[in-house]
Image 1 (cartoon, helix red, strand yellow):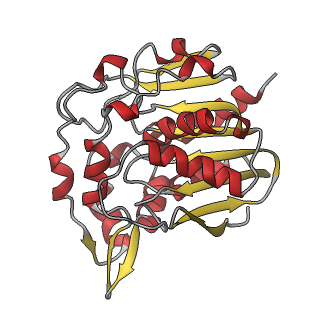
Image 2 (cartoon, one colour):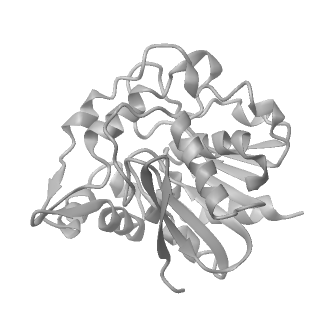
Length: 283
């Protein structure tokens, strides 16, 4: 499979990076989690050979612009809808993990013709009564190591540590290879800790509540959920932020509970995500 082309799209004074794999069929539009980047989907794309795939680097992430905080969640959905508009994407399958799951739903509400179906992989769409409550304590994010000698050093540091020890090795390599940017002879995180912390800090803001629009989404929606639920106070990176009854809120929703997996489903079991993409496309 040929490597993707990197496109840079100007939107609202920012430049958003989009990775595109040429192919056929309805486009697959991938949206990553907080702190990640578009290339974490590489292994899943390889399991869907010949497909036209697009993976965005959200603002603050990857090769996209990094405005100073704060980072408000509606902007990610607007960015995704704007990318789809610029690239004339219609009738796509939207695949979003964590924050990316929230963002594809948000983009669907803003530009409905973008998607024909959605696969939400442990999306950060909390139980409805979480919204407007105190933000999750994610202060530990600000202590993340930001400077590395190389992606290989990062890989070796993480490979035997939780939660990365549960990830497929090739996914961890993609995460490290594209999760750092060269800077003055060293490498820094492509999502700065201050950006990541700001995103978590606004995750329960009232403006992040998508529930008023969800009943209007009449396309098929599958929700993959991890086995352990997120608590209300302190961010637990491996726990599921998705409301247990989220799938039931969509007119054509389907719940897929994966009791033996953590929040990092695409990293631990990319083949399950690829199979759900095939499943949601079946008549």
